[in-house]
Length: 129
Length: 262
Image 1 (cartoon, rainbow over the protein chains, first blue to last red):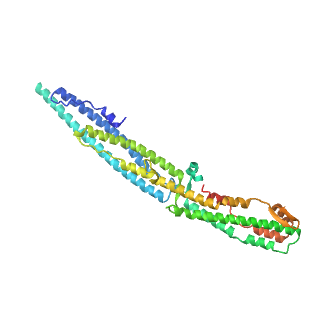
Image 2 (tube, helix red, strand yellow):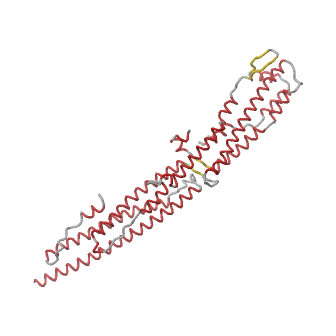
Image 3 (tube, rainbow over the protein chains, first blue to last red):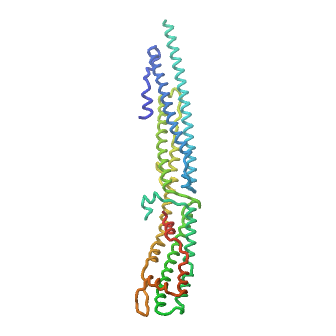
């Protein structure tokens, strides 16, 4: 199952109607489901990042010469190729770290919206009371 | 050709420094042997000598003539093996853009290729999951921000350059090395076939009876006959033989093992 399909299954439908408390309650459910979905997305990203880090570490530590069974110009070319591979992997890793920070920023915005929505609901309740 | 056999290909190995040294030493030993005229001179001296006469001497001379022919064949075979090894010795650096101390093992190259390919596939699974997640977040949470989509295309290219796991084929470093090694080994094998030192040595070593013409008419005189005469021959004759058999003969089986490229 694709990651996007897994994440989609966490999202509750939104009424897009926040003029009533019932609508706000439904919207809160949606926002909370987004937070859960983001947490799941972070788990997926962290897990895949760890796997990619492990592959990178394995390739950093790989002995291309196999105790001197491969040496010479071609092996030196392969060393350069490996260095390029590691550099490209680090670049991707940097992007994944940025993505994780971006998910956290989005989660914070959603939390703020939840707070506003809750305040709005409480305000309506007090004015009704 | 053995290089066409996949099992043989998997075992291909070339340690240039060690092979160069071994081939160089073998060539020197074979040249010393093939250029050594002591044996031929001793034979010629015996054959032209009048000091040893009579029916026994005649038979002994026939046997010695046979020995002389055998020595010449061996020297020719050694000369051919030396030329063959000398050509292979220089072929590696001429045909491979490699360092003098290069070591190439087909087994190691295959192992590395498999490892890189496995790593590349695993990495792609993870990278695909990451980019799928990022794209999904961009679709669903666009009002809460934008999300970086990591692209691993350059990682795939780097893997491809190393092991050709996608489409680099013989352009990738490992496969290029394998192809160069195979091409070189096939070239070396062609050199070996051109000189065919195996056949020369087989022919030289075959114990073919020596045909001789004596006063008793044409008859076969085997080496065993000459051995019988040496037992009763004069000291001069045994000395000549000693000179002949004291000649240093390189271990042909070892030398041929080196140029069989196994």
